[in-house]
Length: 342
Image (cartoon, rainbow, N blue to C red; front, top):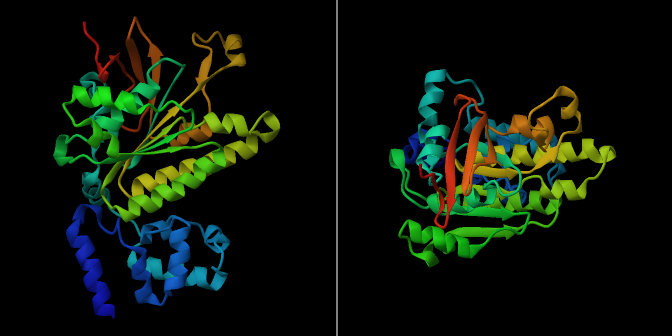
């Protein structure tokens, strides 16, 4: 039995050496004494990989119906045998990050600003007032994610979670025409869900994780438009602020784990709010993105969008771990996001 297990693990590593043990199936726990019924319970809770077990706290595992504390410890112990929980050198980690890909935005200037486009294994957040191009960028990414790109990127399917009822399939048809793609095929590759409450939004992520596990390597992009809209509705006033931020932190943590576990790009949009205290400090723009520090720290790259002249929009790198603070101009066209004409 152990020999079989080594063979399976060996094959998994051989198939995708860059993503070493990233997609180890949770069924491998059977070889370490975990029964099928318990593995099924983990899958129903959205934990489908060995890395997923490592990413889940003991408290959360115990909260799964039918998983006792003793079973939880056994599951954790078995998972640690399959994944080395230790450290890597920076060189080893750099080698592991070679599987990271970028999805083009449709605008060369915007791609250049972002270092290639929307990066996988990261959360990219675009915030701005209404009419600054957040939803248009989301729609364009639905199509460009299906195009082959740089560094051997093959293209893939997209999941779109809509919280504001702004998703329009016909918009995708126009963008598909720009790239000479079959309209029906493009629409067929986008999996759409409408979220009605912040709880529903969180539950959809469990379904997304299960889908990414079932069709491993097929999905390349997860879009949430917008991340905060339902939290603004479900939680009101300062009295519920702490509860709202805690729930938001859990959702963003789940998004980050999904992006790393399945090597997908996560793109979220965010709304703005007026900052009453800004007038006291003579700030030029008295508006700020909502979500506070929780959202600011969770997002890997933050893009600030603002209106330009006519159909042009200005995008600024607001926060990024590896890109300098700079800005570029792009245009919203019938075919989606494109370079602005001089």
